[in-house]
Length: 399
Image (cartoon, rainbow, N blue to C red; front, side, top):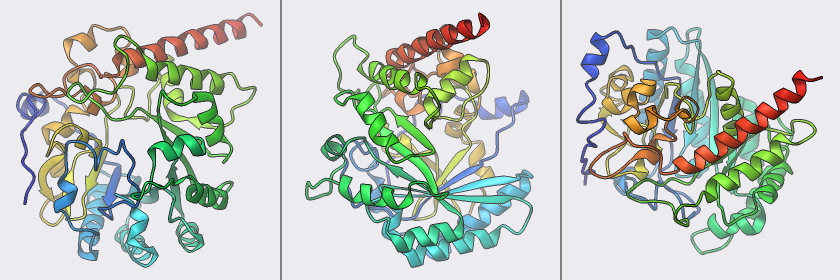
């Protein structure tokens, strides 16, 4: 059974990509390729955009990616790198839970993809996991293959286990803690990903993550949109308040304890630089996803919007990644401020917030040309960070 796709008005029906190309716009080639190596997960997190939100296409896809599929994806990656003279690409193993694929399958997959890169392009490999299955065998594999490992964890044991539970209702923190104690302090550790929850203490959350000495932390707003809004009091900014408290703890430390990508990006953008996060800024998004059945899709967070929101109609067996670059949904995330609606473009903060996370702008019957459903929260963080940065620069100038 296929996924019913109802195109969003913006960008699918109204963004004129041929006109963009005629006017001189050129797409940014993909540098990150996400392989969905396993379609299921061994946790049942209550906020998961894959399993609990609008798009349920995972139910109809193969359980695990087959060798022919990942080899076709590898060939498309190498082809894309050569076509665009890329010096570096990144492969991200994802799911579901990618470790469910098993060490032997992952070893073969990594070897096959690396073997496809015979030119000058360097291939970096990363895996994003919930950490529950991260044992010595897998850590040895990843360390030996130069694969970096990102782990999802939502703070303290009590806070994590309230949201990130096993299917039987049991908590996941103890297993993740064991994995993180194995990986902490090694070059294999890429960092921690944490979902923002206003019901938790932001400082306690940050310090619980910091205890594992992560090289980086990503704080992510839970996926929501105007048709499926986050639960919060009317007129409040609980997610922004949470981020402000975490920012102050991070920014006010006597030395930098870890990188926090969202906070660093906000500061860089306030200073006129660029960001790396999909949550802020106007930099082109250069990520493409390959599902277990070989379909080429847009960034998978769009699954929170509506069924089929990620679809391109392409497959690695039949199509190049270049064919996806001119899809309206991909182009919309690469044209900067031109993708924003009038409300966002009129706002002085838009060069920093970039309209917020693209998936958070969706409204049924309209599409993605709206402010983020977290607009007020992001404004709260950005204006606070600007005040702290201005005060800090002022003190430095007076020395």
